[in-house]
Image 1: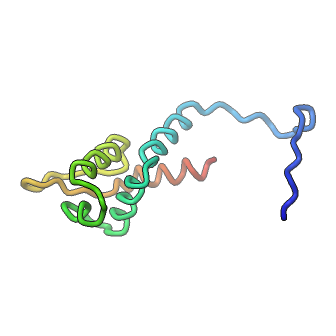
Image 2: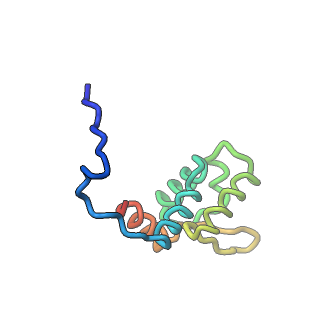
Image 3: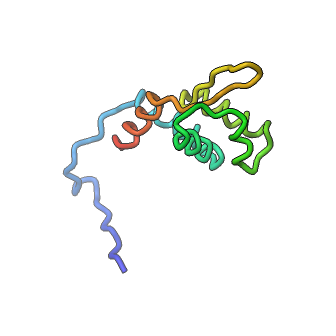
Length: 110
């Protein structure tokens, strides 16, 4: 069993104050909100694993209705994590690698 962590009083703390980073925090919060549903995390994992444009197969891999998958994709697109290209009557989805790298950097910066 681990020991409980000691709570430090304000005068005991020697660390420098955390500088404000409003824009970075807002960016991370927006991306985190986009991933705040297990279905959206799963969609992103599927798109990352496929490394290619995915159209109708997303619905086949999820226990969700087409309209629900579309709603989750819209949220991911609005956050910039997913991009879509129209191919005839379908939209083909893929991960936006720039946004995914930014998400990774923001989380690493915590």
